[in-house]
Image (cartoon, rainbow, N blue to C red; front, side, top):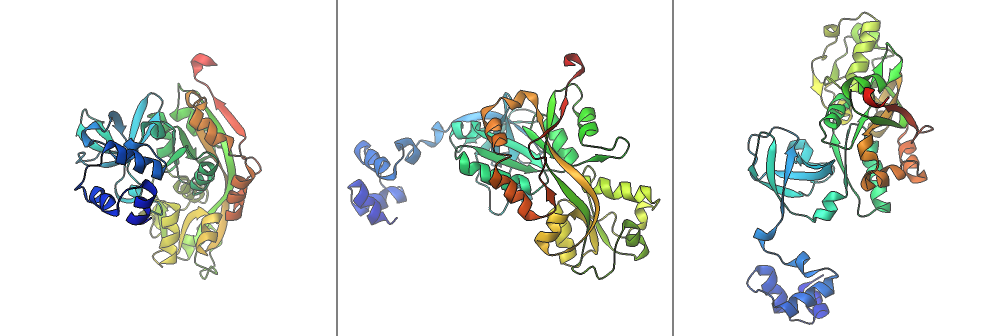
Length: 363
C-alpha cells in the first residue's frame, strides 16, 4: 500500500509515515500501536533495537574461510542448531533464500555465534532434509500449504553425502537411491554400514527410472552403455557418492568396459539438472539421470535401471512435531499427483516403511 493508504488506516499523517520510513522520526507508543493494529502485527515486528536481536550457537555444515557476515539458514536438529551457509549455488533455488541469521563470530573449530534475523519459534518449526531428487522440493511446497507454520530446509546433496549429513546430526532426513548388486537391495546395506550403532527407519517415496539422457531423437542411436564407448560419445559424470555415478560404474563393470575409455568420464557435474543442461547445450552427448529429468528438459532417454528412492530418518527425530507434520502429508493425493505428473515415477509404495535399522544393543 502507499504511504497515504497506511496513514489513513493508522489515523496519522502521510508525513509521519515518510519520516518513520526514512529513519528521521521515532514514533511514539501511540503511533507504534496504531501502525501495528493497521498492519495486523505486533509492535516488535515493526520496531526493535539491533542490539536486542537474540543470538544462538550453531554447528556450521561447511568449512568457510570468512565466517563473519556469512548468510546462513538455520534448523534445530536434535538438541543443537545447524547453520547452512547460503553461499554460491546453495544461496539459490529458483529465488534467493532469505537468511535466518548473520554470523557474528567464530567460537570454535566448527562453531559460530549467529545473530538471529527471524522469530525463534519459526526456526524451531523447521525440518532439514538432504537429498538430490526434485520431488523433495515439490513435497515441501505442498506440505507448507497445509501447515503454514512449517518450514522445510532442503539441502541439495548426493545420496552418500546426504547419509553422512544425517550421521553427523546436520539434518533430520536423508534422501537416497543407491543399489547394491551383491545383495540386490536398495539403500539398506549402505544405511546399515554408515549408520552403524544408530536406529533409523527407511520410508519409500517412489521408484524412479534411471538411465541415459541423450539429445532429442537420440541422433547417435545410443541404446546401451556399450554404445557410449563404441560411438565415442562424450559424457558427463556425477561426483563420487552419487547414485548416478554408482549406476554408471556398475554397468561398465558388468560389461568389462574400462572407466577411462569413456570420453568425459572425468567431467564432473553435481546435479541431475546439470547433467541435463550439459546435453541441452551440446557439451555432452549423454549422462546418467532419470526419466523425469529427461521429460522436463525434452531430452531422449535410454532406461537402464529402476531405483527405489528412500527417506532415511533417525528414530529419535520421528516424534518431533515438525517431522510428523511433514511425513503426515506424504501419502496425500496432491503430493502423489505432483510426483506422478513428472513422469518416470512409480508411487505405489509411497509412504511405506521398507526397513527398520536397529543398533546391536537394541536388537
